[in-house]
Amino acid sequence: MKLSDFDFDLPERLIATRPARPRTSARLLVANGGQIVDSVVRDLGQFLRPGDRLVLNDTAVIPARLSGVRRREGAQGQTEARIEVTLLEPGPEGTWSAMVKPLKKLAEGEVVHFGAELQATCEAKREGQAILRFNLEGEDFDAALDAAGAMPLPPYIAARRAADAQDREDYQTVWARHPGAVAAPTASLHFDDALLAGLRDMGVGFSHVTLHVGAGTFLPVKVEDVTTHKMHAEWGRVSEAAARQIAETKANGGRVIPVGTTALRLIESAARDTGEIAAWEGDTDIFIYPGFDFRVTDALMTNFHLPKSTLMMLVSALMGQDRVWQIYDHAVREEYRFFSYGDASLLIPD
Image 1 (cartoon, rainbow, N blue to C red):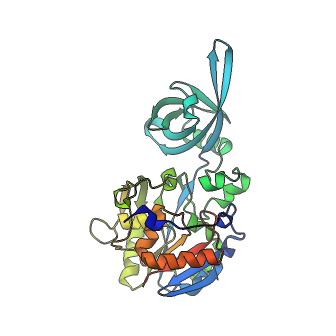
Image 2 (cartoon, rainbow, N blue to C red):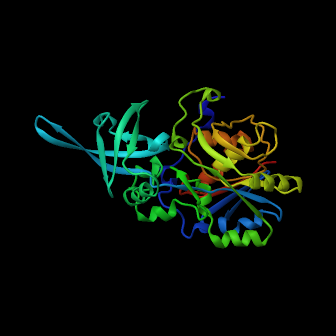
Image 3 (cartoon, rainbow, N blue to C red):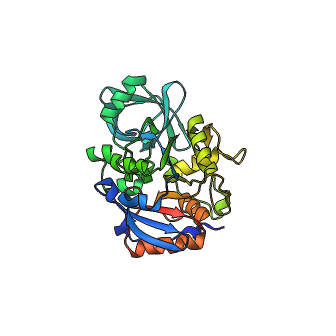
């Protein structure tokens, strides 16, 4: 199975840099068996049934992108360097691993000042990343980060425009509950309270799980034999209540439909040991590619993904590679908007 098997040509004009407004006006491609239907997210209920269950990732994106200044005393006096930081993952005793640009201009022991009384000391440099220790903790850190940070937009958006105040709303789901992600579960961005209420009224159930999406979700696959690719690990939790709800839905003949690949990866991780969904908590590096045995997922709502990405491999595992190419050919031809702020698909395998 080669990386080139998951490549396709995507016109740059189809890469969305802003979401549809209102959220539910985004287009929805529904692939059900051999059919493809063009719809919109607000009409999602037309393709669901009473007794179905949507699994929602309730992680909250933190404003993990920081811009600061490093000051250094030298023979010629004080010099300054602009330092850009993207927080990746919290570590022990208040430290964070972070991507730093330019990393070569920050030495161990030096301090970066970000504003809002927030600053960080570089404690170590490992594998192209820095370990930072901040001067604030707990609620004080959260407040300062909220004041000084910006939303960590994906690279393909950040290369076209800077994050702004509107992204604080746009790049967060309406049910975000547990801060810790540095990337949004983007299929979930299409929902608003009115759509949720309408689906609930027609008998669709909801279960919340938590997977803190990491920046590793944007890392490219660098091996030609995709089966040798090593996934980044992300922390997740499926509660006893969520596991019970999902199990009951399957027992009653309803469909379990994760909203987004993050929710799918989490519930499939929670079913690896026994083949059935169970409460689960920990780090998952599950890698889903064609040949994967799905034990919980019956369908998937997701956005349109990058060529040669692990997410293309995941949807190919669910739908079959030939079917995915039919779906993506249709999406490009009909000019659906792609990636994090783009349109959505509902994928229902045979």
